[in-house]
Image (cartoon, rainbow, N blue to C red; front, side, top):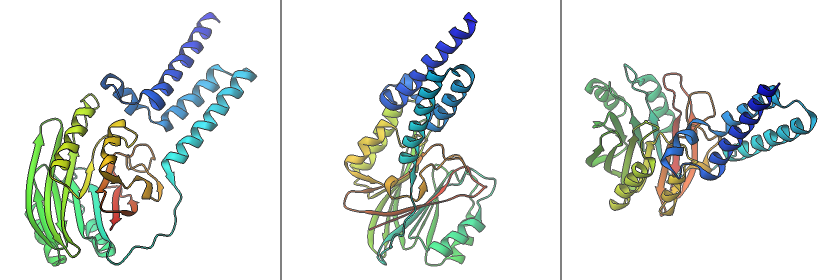
Length: 299
């Protein structure tokens, strides 16, 4: 009985500490970021439910913990779900597809072609395309002659309905890869930063995201798309919002982009410079990748 009481107390203390990290401490400190990333709110809700069922069946504690879990569910749903609504897309809006293609042995050409035909995006930006070939570029170029396609350094691909003027590549090993793509679209010139950050949970996210922000700000980037391997709730994304608009609030349904089919983490992001306004963010899921395909519209 004494061991059970100790376990129950330890479980409650640990749970309270996890909640403190999630809501207050977050990833301000590098030594806490692993815990912050590993225990998103849905996981904390599940853990709280298990602790309640296993250790706290007495009426007072049970009611308190059930109420806490209900509140956590409300907070999570409020922050992670945006009710679908009808949004008018202006004819002169610019559209972008961003997708982490998950380093498949072959590029999912059928899915790409289907979405290009359907959406007619101005920009197609892909990361983790290690196995992309020149044959893929030729096939896409023949199927969509209005676009210019290129394989980029860092296992990335870009497609532009217009002309690619210049590409510059910046890499810091075990931190980030960024392709800065200058392009000419129907709506005018645009500078896009196609980003993929290293996925180690132990690396200093403050430094990595701070460096990415510094690089895009120095170059006056108009559009940032990328897999940041960092949840949107990270405090380090708040610095982006000084000069850039996040598409987070313009989504439909659950905001999470990873993993496939589970609304857990929003680690793929789109940002526009403040002079451009997000209109809509859509997400599509395909079982060839564990990341959602993002489709953003802005003006």
